[in-house]
Amino acid sequence: MSVLDGVRPGRDARRMEQFVEILRWPAEAGRRGVALEEGHSCLWLLGPGELPPELGPREDWVRMPIDDDVLRDRAEQLAGRSRPAGRLEPGAISVDPDGLLVHGGLRVVVPPIEAMILNRLGEVPERVVTRGELVDLVWSDDRRSARALDSRVHTLRGRLAPLRLTIHTIRGHGFLLAAEPSTPISPADRQVPARSIQWSNS
Image (tube, rainbow, N blue to C red):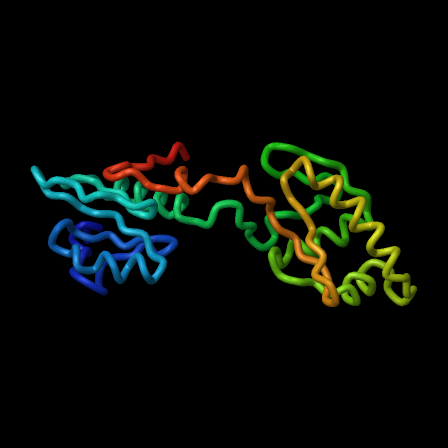
């Protein structure tokens, strides 16, 4: 069955990766608010001669008829654009056996002890890993002081800075790995102009 044949009104609309809903415009316009509130993206199907809607940052449109593979590609591109910017995926930050960390087209050498710390933090980015767990992981039954761990984390922060990664200290709990935000955006830059369509180069 064609992807287009599988598109049905309302909640039965076909969904792609990252909850991209493929909907007909304007027949299914009533679904728009609900879909966006649920965190989904909307790919609108326009018939010949239909005017496109004003688009938000999680929307795109295509005109029918359209090849199924092209439609799928556009939905995947929209899904990619809709992922939170700068958010790290579990396991995306990991030091390889040769001690190299590659991220954002850059590479750094990470010594073994720091690699163990970073790999554990990279398994659960943006979540806290306790001090006790890291000490046990790195030094096993040799109980080192908190200062030893702090010293390693401090050095590791310096290595990660060029990659726009940072390790936050959560006082009284432990550490978490996160991507540094990009250059701050002014309120005026946050506005999405009407009828703008953001195309992906990926």
